[in-house]
Length: 462
Image 1 (tube, one colour):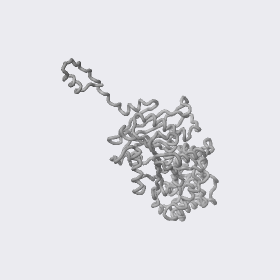
Image 2 (tube, rainbow, N blue to C red):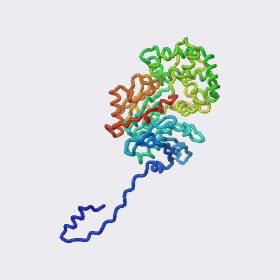
Image 3 (tube, rainbow, N blue to C red):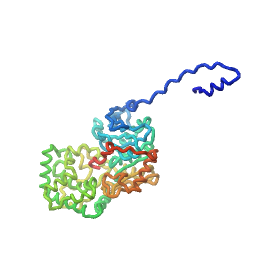
Image 4 (cartoon, rainbow, N blue to C red):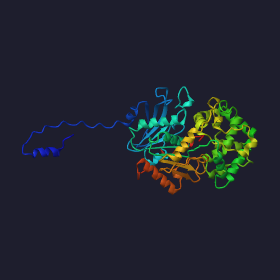
């Protein structure tokens, strides 16, 4: 304990004057290590600092060594890619679970903007290059992925000790829910956007009901279904155009669908879904009439679906998603009654159809039943946002009443977020996120640079 001046004065005032020896000087307190050095000191972490996006931030690409099988910590490992947007260790941390690849540019998710915090964004295991070699696909399940995120949280919490919020959209939102399910104490709240919950994979009536009622009038969906039917009625013309486009771009169909004809049928089945997933109702007038030329119909399908996606080069990078859908997550399978007379490939619209033969697997319902039961009955601090015009929002989570909330953005597609909610809902949701993050009245740092792109809208399957 350091002796202060008041102690010395009391001794001098005593009737017996004593000699007070000089005290040794205390060493100057060391300044905290630079954040880059703190990150590099984490075992298994590699750090590459990038140019800062703007003053007040630092930006890092990271790589973290993970076990391929978390039940065998001394077994094979792989490098998982992360990116860190560093604001300040005294600000909250947002764990952004991509569910897919890691974006290679800086951005802020909506919760990061709301709390003016740091953000760690994680590439899902088995998405290249975060893929083990050799590939043991049996180690791609929701518990293994959740444990990846758990280890990342444990590694970073000694540095970022304030509140943690996890977030993600679409499959990223599902991923944040699964992480919370297995490690409920890792974060202080979850904000999951447009996260499907296919608890009963055999019952997809919710999707049929969605397409029967989406939009303010039935006219738009009717026109989409009519153009789907017309495209298949002109199959020969359409497939000839598709094959020519594939030759011009070096696309192949050998690994997944086998032929351009089969890939084209899948694209037609996807058309109405993709339209509502990424377009607004204001785009309904762009749907061509059935009397349109084959060139115009083909161009519309290509614009909405992106026909490159159904070639090997487009779909194989998403094999980890389709594998998870085929084994645990489930998939949406509307009935397509209005196309029955024109389909050549029965039961095509399933997850295994989008995988190469060696990865096609058997589905098990136990994981989704467990997660749904936990979210409904036991979870807390969960906030879900859905879009009323988003097909993926047809089957959704229904959280418990333990400080958990669900909101629907009117007219919103798969890009639904808190900002698109009705004003009262947006205010309530924002206040909840701030409370969970331990901040209030925060002055949000506005940034056109950091907030201009939403990587969650770039995910094709979900």
